[in-house]
Image 1 (cartoon, rainbow, N blue to C red):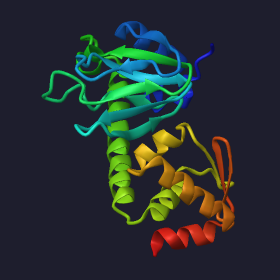
Image 2: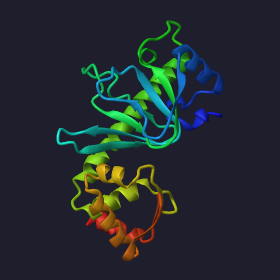
Image 3: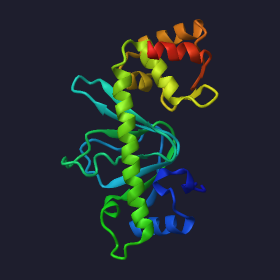
Length: 225
């Protein structure tokens, strides 16, 4: 598989040679996962920064009640697992699961904070990119908190779809219905019923893992109301 590193924020402003030196110097490696495999699990010691190269995954957490929460989706060329790398906890407090067959680049933690001594420009750029990504992730988590506190289930669904649609109003879901319900802090039957109501009202059209927004103006009004 040819890896398009220019699509990954982790390697922005780096040429092919610099990316190659980064991967060689860091000891990074490619890992393969089947659907429902754990990429990392709770109680494991955080040791890697992960980049999803192909497939789909999500990062989740289980509550004491047994209920699962999906913290965020992972799409190709997203990085994940970084928030636990430098926390005071010695183990993960979340887990990452492959939603389908997936290919992952794993970069050892040490490379993120231990310069090689030559002050290589590509290593400096790499660390700068990580800080930029962390800032974006913080913004995304703030958006999710706002989404989950935005009111009823319909408003949460609309907010999620608007945040994840392309310019044509199409949302390509990486998660199944159960995982999406977990993400939106809802029961799966309630989510399915609400999606059916929204489809009958002409707000959306669903086709397996595609959701097409048919009335952007009304959906925006629901979120802003």
